[in-house]
Image 1 (cartoon, rainbow, N blue to C red):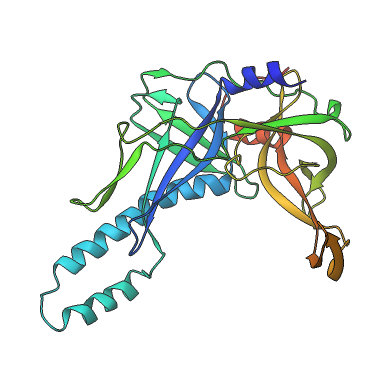
Image 2 (spheres, rainbow, N blue to C red):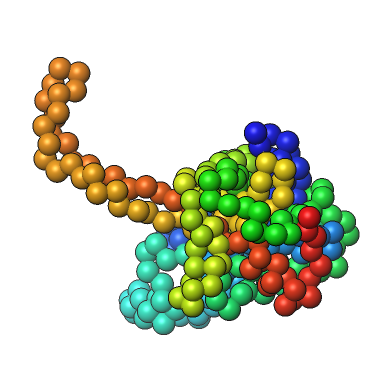
Length: 296
């Protein structure tokens, strides 16, 4: 049903790769999010909560560099450990705190000088605009549904994103105490993953204005910022979050026979539904930012 649409939408949907290291740990934690391009000028949309993480990455890394520089100025001797602990408090560091984060935009644009991030003041939408790039590495661009009234509850829709961080192209440089992207360290690619769902309900804000679409299936971690589309590949929204609805079919201390043995069962089932920002609100934001987009 969605095979052709996935190929089409996959041409302009790309992963945002994150690697993170926490204080007093050497393990590198990989993570993913998604963006999709809306024109041929290097303009893409993703979620505001993803954009915040992108902005945070530089601040976290800079703070740790300042901490290391301050520690280097502390003289050796019996008082050094206490002085370092004071610096940890000043820089709000404790075991498990993120200290280094790096981001990579695979398959987006080449040779770019930088990028600008603009976040919606209320909704979970953000714009990423790549600057002074050599060429685009994506193909095609989003074409939004012109009339969202044509998308109704009961319609089957699909989301595309990158929920499973299987990339390995990174390493920890112990000598310089830093994270590095390294294509020789392992596979650079990570699989895209589609997930379908039925349009169940509209989503409205406190003011009663509709801002999105609920789906009968969850959006997966890493798919945030990925496009929601029809079987024709027309974009009608963007995956934003997943809500957990308590079904009320609770089982507490129930005795059940399984494989000839009696077990005590405790179960509290939830329905996990996806929440997507609607195309109308995305287009409205793009117009506010003077970004060209397409619709059909």
